[in-house]
Length: 421
Ligand code: LLP
Image 1: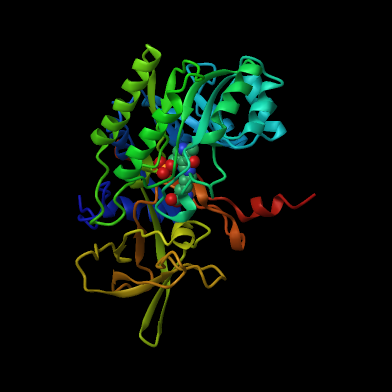
Image 2 (image 1 turned 120 degrees about the vertical axis):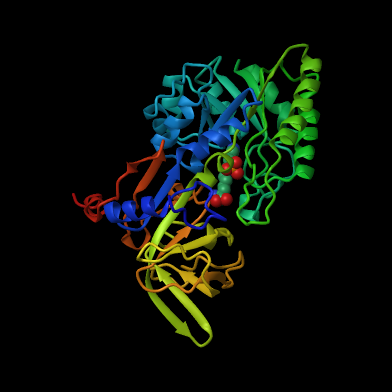
């Protein structure tokens, strides 16, 4: 079996498989490897509960893998609740689904009450809205500890410029209201952003203690460490040490156990860590332009498919396979600007977070060759749009060496039909 780009191919996918799938489904498409996801789940098994932040990859077939592997699920919209239900999650069972948000809309609130879904509350208004119509409802509080940290300022979810969570000095008032409405507080949750380092992690653990070890705090059952675990997008990026991560949180939990004189559960809520490295995006080179000293390679996937580079300046390693199926990873490489087909000048995959163009050392590709964007399993397909009236592209899952389509390509007519009355 000939593997492409042995150095960066984290899923050992063969060139033969890629070419077979290209022939069958045409480019561009997403490809995931189930074994990679299962392996990542195993790395977090020390936590009592792993809850998948499905916004990172919300395909119901990925959710089914999570469910079979004993992973629970987070939902942040009505759509995500319905996805979780379709994937077989049972809201009545052990907090299978937790709804995390800073707001309720009427439709979502009704569904949550009908199904008795636990709510991770992110604003005081939500306490009033739920408490006044659903006595005894199980809730968590999401606390904004007063600081945050993210791989980019747009993924920082704590501190005074973040809209997320209940500001920590409002905790006492929240507990008062929870008691007044007879809501059942079972968990305290903190998520300060995506791409947490150990310094900030320790700070979050300390803050969890500062907030929970209070005389007015009811005896909760769970603390949640949120998500945010990073993955190595670049070769030199360091892998997160999950044992260390667990150790810090476990110490925190043990102190809380002592305080309440009971054993509470420790949850973790990752998205990226579980799915990012399982996914790749495969596309084809459609045009090459040389402008002065700049070389543009334009492919058939755009930021409507993969928006991370445009939105955050995110880096995704790119490999190339020739149209004839040759692995080009050892070919001579040159500085290349990789662009998409959209009618918008920012549709460039190689850019910094301030929008400035950067380059990728890409093999010298020709028209018809294929490019592969790595580590796109998280916030790839789930952040896609129909911009430029481009249909959503297929998602394919390889499990036990068998590829299976888990989302077909959207038809242009399906887009148009939404507007025909
Ligand atoms: N829990 C909560 C409450 C969250 O808001 C998030 C992510 C997670 C868990 C999972 O975070 P993760 O483990 O995946 O870092 N689109 C951005 C990431 C935005 C994350 C939003 N919330 C990106 O592509 O990097």
